[in-house]
Image (tube, rainbow, N blue to C red; front, side, top):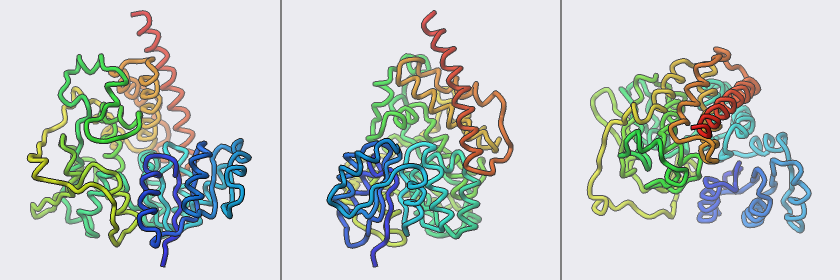
Length: 391
C-alpha cells in the first residue's frame, strides 16, 4: 500500500532530494501535497512530475501565477498559512523541510493530526522542542529525525530506550576554518565561510558550520529528540564526515552510523522507516577513505558551542533567542555588514538581554520571542556595522 506523502518545502535542497527518492521508487509513495515559499515554476514542475493532488505556495500574492502554471492538471493550487497547515495534516507521512520559523505551524499541524513527521526543519525543535515533543506524545505522532547526525543516533538506538545510554556523541566536520587561528577566522570573507570541505549546503547553514553553531543547534535538537540532558551529549570533531554520530551504552559499547556525505541517506531512512529503500547515493569506500580522525572542538575559537549549551541549560525562551539572533547575525555577515567574529558576539549580546518567558506554551509565543530577539540582534548589528565603518 502506498504511503500518502506531503513534502513541505519541496523546492529546497532537502525537498529536492526527497523528490529524487520518490522518483526512484514511485510505487512506494502517493504524493498528496507539495509546498514552497515563492518558487512557482519549480513547485508546479514538481507537482506535474509527481501527480500531486495539491500544491501550496506560501506567498498568497503568487496564487494566480501558480494557477496558471498548473492549468490543465488535476492538482489543486492553494496559498497561505492555512493551506500550508492543511497540507501538512492531510498525509500519512510529512517531510518537513521548510526552512526557518515559517515551518513551525505546519509541523505542529502535522503533529496534532497524529502524523509521522520526517523532521528536517531545525527550528521546530530548537525553538519549540518541549512544545513539539509534548504534542507528539499527546497526539500519537512520530517524529523521525532527518538531520544526518540525529538520524545516525536514531539508527544506532534501533528502537532501544535511552535509559541504557550513557552518552550521545554528535560528530562535526569542523567546517572550513577547523585549523585556522582565531585571528585568521576574524578576517574570513563570506565566500570563504560558505566553502564547506565535505557537504554541499546553502549559505546560511554553511556559515553555521564555519562557526560550529550548527552543532550547537543540533545539541539542542538531540536533547529534545532523545531526552538526554546537556551533560550526556558530547560533540566531537571528525573531519572526514564518515561517522555521522555515535551512541555509547552503559556497558561501554559504542555504536556508530557510517555513510557518505549525502543527505539522501538519512532522508531515505526516514521515508522508508521502519523499512529500507535504495538511495541512489555513491557507496562508502572505507579503503579509499583510509583513515578516520577525531579531535575535541576548541571552545575559544568556536564560542557558539558554549552559547548553545548555555541556552539549552537555561531553557525557556533562550534557545529561541539564540536561533533568532544567529539568523540575523549570519545574514548580516553574508551581506558584508559585520565580520565573521561578530556573529557569535551578536548572539551573546542578545542572550544576555531580557531572557523572555521561562515557559513557552504556544507557537505564537515562540514567534513573539523570535521577533523580539531578531529586533535586538538587528540593533546590535547596526552598532557593530557603524563601528566597522569608523574603524
